[in-house]
Image (cartoon, rainbow, N blue to C red):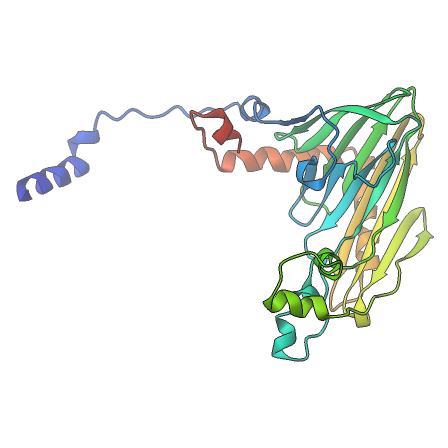
Length: 305
């Protein structure tokens, strides 16, 4: 056994791998990733099956919720750090994590003249971009959307010849979704769940809307002024032709500077669009990101995952 051990050591350190060939590692990432692009030919009706986009900070989901009209599909905006900051006065209250829950933000409704009858959409991984067509009983419209890789700005475009697409913002009340479920009698029973079910959270004021210098703002203060979130957006173009939406979200705590930051975000985004490098800089980041880590498996389903 000892002889075999020393033989292996010698092999590892000398000539056993002398004939190892160098690997010519060239990958056409665009072609490779395109095999795993996500496709939609059925209208997504919940967040679990929705096309998505994000940069780790802000992002969106596109789907038609069960409560929506047949001619509406919504762009649900999210931010990873938007959660409650209610003060816990005791250790027992610290366990009531509904006081630190993630919070719903709001969505843009895309309202067409005709009811939505189908979709043909692709999430292009190489370019980190959602494109496709939404079909209606009156015609159709093309979409293109992405969350910029390094700027907290979401871009979404609609283009049509035979429809009219109205884009409107709808703020959602910052109520923890699990709290609503528990109050309606749902959810697990016993322990901390029952304690949270017994809590009555004080509600915060409704969001307020404003407009300045061509930008629209939705300001949402949280309970006892412990945190705030501002969504800002601008819509340009023609609803019966080509139109663009740019939007940004910022959540601040303990600072109160969300309005200043989203304004700056949109200004920088607009400037980048005008200088024609907004989309190219977004793609460049992703094109440099993918080659940093690569794995190929002889199983398409696992490889796609």
